[in-house]
Image 1 (tube, rainbow, N blue to C red):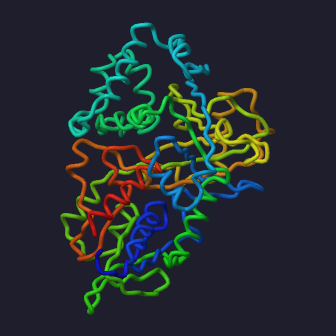
Image 2 (tube, rainbow, N blue to C red):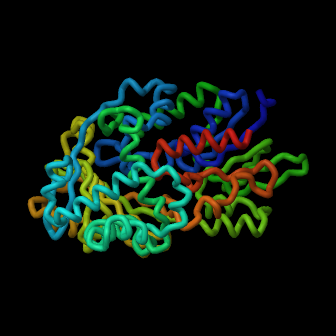
Image 3 (cartoon, rainbow, N blue to C red):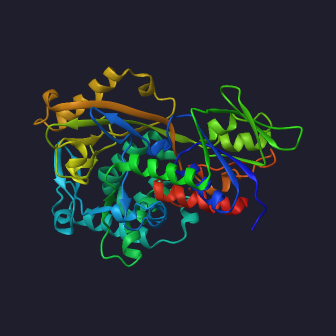
Length: 435
């Protein structure tokens, strides 16, 4: 065992909490700096009228073993609920079910040959193991080669644009590969089929229990403490100062914030590593959540092929979770992934409401303003690091030129999609590299 040290963790999201947990279990003294009044970060929750649920949509898969391990440690795994859900596709103004092979074969937008090529592409991608080679190929080139131009233009291109915008032109094929790999993870682990899961109470309950567990172990949590600066002290330790001017000394400091926010913490980083961190391209998200008096569909996920809608897809959470969690209302998320400087971030809540609900009412004529019980938009400018060409090669190391200062964030996910399970895995892997 290494000699116990003092560690400052900047950011109390799932990544920061996991690092804090493992450090404390190893005997170190740990302090978390969290700018909010509770832990959770992107898994945080919000008030929706009289109820509280996740600000952004999350789901747990049977194959999410890292997440389930943490839930077991904090005493919540046995409470997980597992549900088999349905998937929908919206194309040419019509909604189709795509939840099994029979429905796939009936899918009107594709002819028989297109369906075969699409299925063959997905099957092939699920069996590819050399993900690094895919980092050297543009996703559009790879998909056109495998699926053909017809399938690419009808299916892949609209989905890529919905998720990435014009950034798809600079994104590598590993993006689609990681998505398909996650979909097939359960089958590869010996499970007969993938199930979607959730915890009653949502991530509000998970984050509350996680923070309680950390405090019971002796982790200090400082709420409302926004880290402002990390610098070397005369004593040789790192001086961490928050926005209120309060300072503490630590042997080691780990920032779990996004690359731009982590860079702003220290003026002592070298020009080359600043360039590497600045080279990470992020997508942000605008994610309205609405409560309705009635459901819009029976699908947990509705993929949208039409390009006129302002949202990336539709997540009907109550097609997964019990409506007891939402007081009988239907909970729907309308995520839109955009660049961090997108004008949507500057829109007022009323402007966003008009844009997003107008499109929803057009898609689902049986829904009107009278059905809306709650509306609220959550947003984050730095969410998803784009897997550009040679991403893993260009990625900066977690160790910085400021001795004992490390940057560990979700950009370190190099062969997986952004989700809680991968975030926990990165936290544990990178911490092992550090200590």
